[in-house]
Length: 439
Image (cartoon, rainbow, N blue to C red):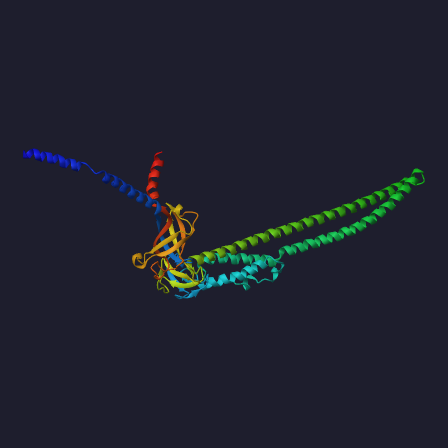
């Protein structure tokens, strides 16, 4: 009896437990829908910024210039002291070499004067220029590897000056001109003589005609007639001879004029050859001087202040590729960030986008971050990255309001906020990409 009761109760209990009230189902579905709608609405309304991370270097817009040694050697001459203000092109350090720095600088200075002299060689005033001995050339200069260029210039200059001052072509020209003048005078005299001979021939021809008439009438003896004819022939011969002499004289004048042209042409060719040799030797020496300076002399490329990388002293060893000295620009410039932006995702970066910069020297949790804007983007990628320049409107003041201590070439991480994207788009974009990839 008790077993039947227990069984009946068990079925009732199960009936109660198995039947879910409708209001619970209705409200449960409604609640789930509301929650889903809220999530969907929130994912549409709320936006989350997309960030591209890249390494950044914070520096001046005109950063310090580092001078690097190109050769091994000892520090031969230290021309400046640390923290000294220098001008653009000023020499700072000379590395040991076979040339005397003072002699090379003297030669370089004198070359400016030589350039002036070389220019005057092209003018009619060249006879008044200094001779090689009066000019700068000296055998006492210690020029080392530049000696060959210097000797070549000296030789070519000396030969050219000798050629110009000797003026052989002028002497030849004067001699030929004198001959031409004499032949012209002779030609004039022969022309006068030819006129007289022509008159004499005309008279003799008239006499012959008279004698011929008398001879034909039998009045004139044959012997006398033949003599008259011989005289006429002699006069004609004399007239022709005079004309031949004049023609020969004119030919001589023409030949001498041709010789004159050849002398001028020969002079121009020789003069041109000397000029080319002199010009080439001058250019070679200038090129050698430039190479010598670039190799052994560290010069300031900008105006600024010297900052040695370490304490340098005379005869101290310097290795090639050593960073020897920095030149800090004299005029202060604004602080900027330079980002090496990877190619991947670089198309999202636009001008005026916000940038957060975390400086390695200052942990951002404690000091905060610098804020900036994208100011410029390079058009062409170099080494698989674009160069992005970031301006810092607040300077070196962090978003925590702290003024950070700036030093050149500070490294850090830049976070470029490319655009605000809806949360739902972040969920749907991967799905859209998969669907498009499969279609």
